[in-house]
Length: 369
Image (cartoon, rainbow, N blue to C red; front, side, top):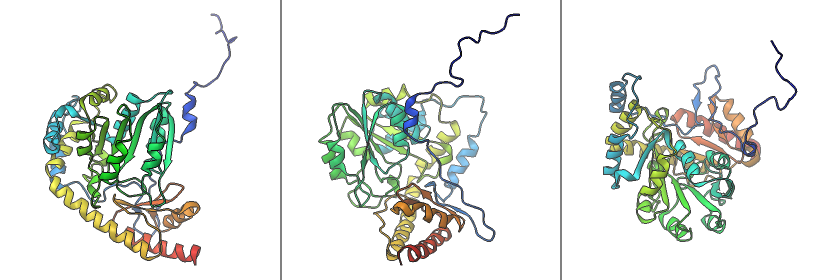
């Protein structure tokens, strides 16, 4: 037997794309530290602290069937119900494994190394990841001091290489919702061949007057795609159901990019049942919004500069003190989201929020006198 030829020695590990070095991986929210005598609270992942509606749980149980069979790849029943409720054609809808898959697919159908993508910052952490992975040049436009999109700066950043713009309303993590009039003014400055994705993961929690409604924008602008999810207000984050609304040409492109059979039968059934109880979901979302407003007001009363909060979270722009604040919360068995420039606190149980308020009061006295 002859020995293997080792004369051509090269790298000992597979060579990966160099673009992977230009952005960090997505890191989920941390779990709370276990401390004896304290109930732990995870306020780091924008999860809904309420369980799904009882009818949704029943639907999940009823559809926990033989996993040997593939689910309906077209998600026909769910898409039909969504189309009826939103007043769009069923051909304008695609259902995917969460909104995250849609964001990835949008970059795949628009972006490569010859293109540019524009998004606000800070915003959803996946934006630099998905656009960087596609090889696109990333233009992260800083939000204004009040946490709102700087739409003038975003419009000024558009070039002939721009192929994708992402807007987030309410913006995660800073909180403000975009206004309908400002978005329409912005879209009037965007070339028609540039796709504009409006990420409305938290739209059900928004209570501000005049907040943008993506469904209407899609009807008026062929280059707008609306991204939504059942993860937040519907409390179905663990089932991974998202959907997009866009013109048929965009949907056709997305269908070539999304994963076949990604949304399970049980997930589709749960989302459909929750959709049929949208009135109850909306009531619960507004109850969470009321808790959010009380929490934000309490922080402001302590002296904190809290941007307008329209999602199911509140943002503290702490800058260099972000890690110290996170550590102070950790010591009280509460996990919050440290994003470097600030800390995001998801709305959860009152006891957990009260504990954060106590930490915030002590922290402010210690660091600001």
